[in-house]
Length: 326
Image (cartoon, rainbow, N blue to C red):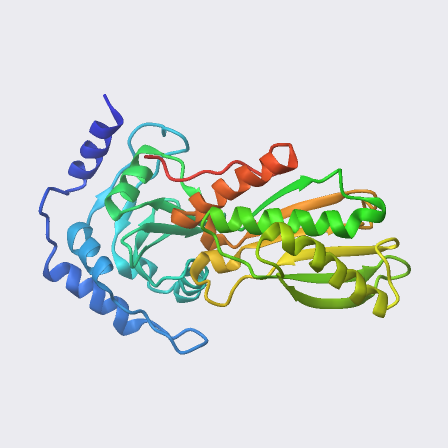
């Protein structure tokens, strides 16, 4: 039997059918959820939105059982009833802030994971292991639970690559050129168009002291022409503070433009030179918040990571990029 047949059998066995509308029962569950919800720290309460109402009207009251041992992970059943997760305002408010959308309670899994739908209709779960995207719709998320399809963990991502060619007297110049490559990659990949680079310099002797933290705008009519003048500006600023690239840690990071919104605003790309654990090496690092681990932002970052890995000459030193099963 195909996975699609498993999914249909699981939903139908639970009482679902095409054009199903739980009507008054769904409305009552929604009202009970909103009426008894306690405000979180900022005074916010559950707010119903169209995607949540639509999903609950279709699936409210169903008890979906697991089908088989699980395709990727252990399959599990669930009950669709928003009152089962109505007490989780703090957990879902934190997740909503992370992914940049509101969530509304949807139900509970047999393993005591709490379910919620977001404004795009996606189904999420929060349990002792963290936050998970189950499916791009409530239906596909329920299918994933019943079949044991692997969920996508909503978590911060990090990629890093060594840059062995950056060291010695040309460290600042080479690091600045690497930063310009990163500017180009993130711009062409659709992440953001940085117009400045932040330099932080920390002495490595003793406890390590931050002696310089300054932002330098791009100069020139091209990234190639900006690298030289920017490196000179940075070296001049370091000289004014009595420090050189030798005996210090340099971190050059791209400044995210203020107009960047949503998950891509959490992206950070930096070049570190002279770090105390590896003073003779430079490292290129790309990081992003948990909200950028799915959807368009995840695809953008995967593309940028691949291009940066190609520039650095090696595979990204990070876990595999994963997502909900199709």
